[in-house]
Image 1: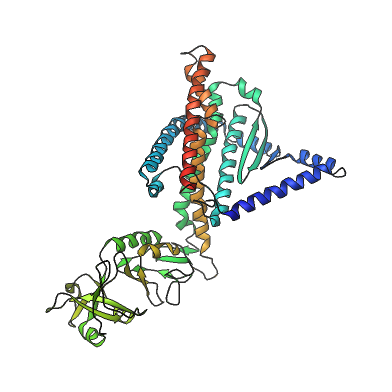
Image 2 (image 1 turned 90 degrees about the horizontal axis):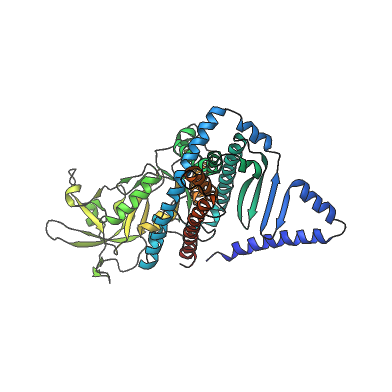
Length: 494
């Protein structure tokens, strides 16, 4: 369900805007000046919708349209080819997504939804409220770049640009260009296709630029941040197993999880499943230390079949299993930190026979699926985590970038990374959705121009071509509507 706070804020904001607009329009002393100000500045208000239209950017569009005619011809011709391929590819992609959604609904396995390429995003449901700013800014940037492509392509094809505008519908921002329809209808279908495909082409290129920036970020930030030394902690969930006096703190550099080396965030996410799916790691303990540290305790079976030998529920002691030359399975309740501190990891006793001091491999005897994980974050004392590895994974936020100077904030690279990822996702989604042959989207005009350019010699009757286009648009609209409806149901109903 959408959080009530989000709904209240959205409804409250729009009610305030609508109430203020109504009061100003009903005031006899202010009405004329207010409406004149709205008209002169290009603002239009209606329930849950604000639109701004201006011509102040027309000169900028014109300059861009005449920078390099040869390059722009090649650029928008490539965009035309891409747009046509994207139009057909979007149908295949949406069909695949629809089949995946239906299979998940029938199989009752919503956990597999993360494998889908396209997902419906609902702020506050499957989009964290803390990342709404990234989401809306990325949408706005993607929309502006999309419309910029249309505007420049239109001016290059000698179609007049009346103006550029931006709008907000409920909570979603967007942009648009106002083209002179008469000029647009006079040019050839191929020229029209260049204009209509320019939006999705620019969205695709924005994805390429954002991805390139994301991959080059370590090089671009090298003078200020370095990478490859570990994973830097940027946030620890309060009250989680990773917090506390012996836990992780903001600015700690994690370098190792048990015997798994951590050089970056990806290593962290790879190490935890590795430790979770493999048997519990053991620790080499000197025999003399084991006998000296022995704490008596009778071993008994837990409900899941595992053994427990610490009956006092101590927060510092843990049950370990080991074997010696006489008995194959022994148990000892030992102070965990003192026992494994500075010890090597092992799987069997053979792994511990590397020096002249006799040692045994002690393995923590824990409940199924739980693990003892030693997290190294020098120079601090190792954090000892006991529990489900997934709890450790999702209770800590990390970054690859370590500041070279103390005054540099560790969140700056995280913010840049997050924004680039949103830009790639949303700009790519805008390209795919707009390319769908669907009513009221770019795909409608792309399909119409494409059919005019390819079928005019085969099917001379314009009405017949329009009828073919209508059925294609009907199918594309139904496909898109089905994806959106089922996607919303999957996100909100579950």
